[in-house]
Amino acid sequence: MKSKNTLLDKQYTIRCRGKLVDLSTPAVMGIINVTDDSFFAASRTHGLHEITERAGALLAEGATFLDLGAQSTRPGAAEVGAEEELDRLIPAIHAILHHHPDALLSIDTYHAKVAEKCILAGAAIINDISAGDMDPAMLETAGGLHVPYIAMHMRGTPATMQQNPQYEDVTREVLDYFIQKKEACRKAGIDDVVIDPGFGFGKTLAHNHELMHRMELLHLVESPILVGVSRKSMVYRLLGNTPEAALNGTTVLHAISLLKGAHILRAHDVREAVECARIISYQRSF
Image (cartoon, rainbow, N blue to C red; front, side):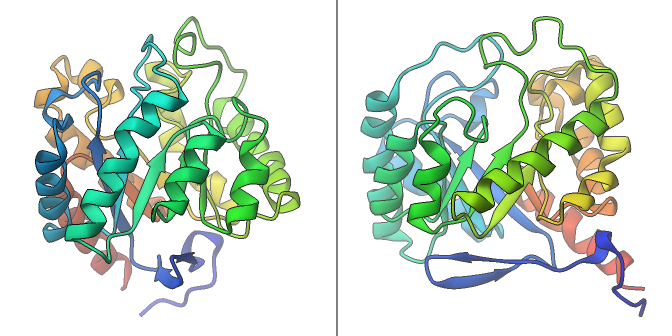
């Protein structure tokens, strides 16, 4: 068995609700969209019964985390606001934890108020697509709550991010961003910072694939890396199909990202992602 002595092989744990989660074996975060505006229709849930059923199914398929989002962040999506997010998320959190009390819930929001109330309701992780850039109170709030914080790279906002995004060197610029952002998180008191390169957020098709191709550079930040490419346009636009037909392409990108050292896959299709992670992990053990 090979020695674990490179940044790519560095092992991490994050603390969720008093439990250490070991990320030395890649984990899968299952997606639950508590909204009617997600780009992938099959991931939308309607009503608490359907939400708890989807949660149970994803956990049974091997999800380590469940990511709840009540605000669509697809390009051009309309903002629903913090109060609407809370109206959707708090009942969902209570319902899921009633049926699955050990579930580790991630809250996909860029509003500090939403993050705080959801963590107090029982969620375990904050997943912020703006890494604190859209709400200046977010980093201090996350630090005070002492929960893992997923910081994602994005240019602009969901409404503007795909309006001619430009980079001189997308990977270097994302790396520089995270070096600075991790320091800001440290100063805010956040102990567990997970970085998300933000595939599809303020990046062209070429930017996305170049960033994936050179993703191992992001290990210089020395934080766990979450990859969210599930059924996104970097898959279906390249293949000329649709989100509904993009599972096979998604699995290919999952395999590539795991070979480059991803620690968490955020996925609509948990069973397939878990199987991919198991095979890649076994291969990398030699």
